[in-house]
Length: 181
Image (tube, rainbow, N blue to C red; front, side, top):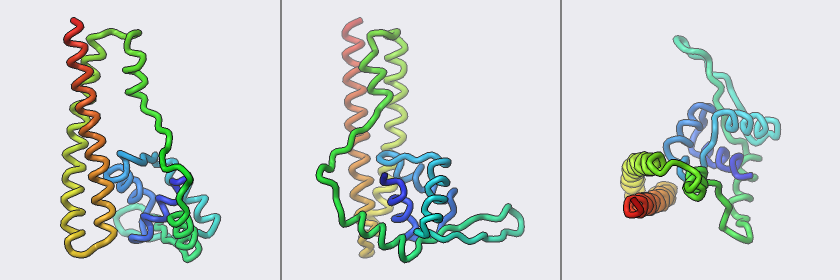
């Protein structure tokens, strides 16, 4: 149920279109809270119906008009209530299709599994590079006394550490497959 809260929290930064939100999710939140464009627009519609966000059509000369969303006072209240009401447990279940495929790997071709592990490592290394850049950007902003940047830097660091651990895990899996012949 946190996607609407994520959207409200992001709209606290500035008014945005659904497309702007999707870019932000893809660039900065994807490692811990991915969202599809259809989910974002569905939630924006729901939030607007509940009067937690307002929208305004912004006319553009050379491009199609865009719908820009702004958080309302009621939206700020809902977001604040959510932020200050933590659940009893902070552990949340996650689904990981790649881990499931490795778990069931004995029913697959070993060479294909090794190929996919190498691919996974490459993808995670690219993610680490992106996260490292974001972490540095937020670190610079945090030094300028931006409290929100400090928290975003912390989250990027968490995502980076998780990605690094997954690379180590995949390398270990590859090594074990190589030993087994």
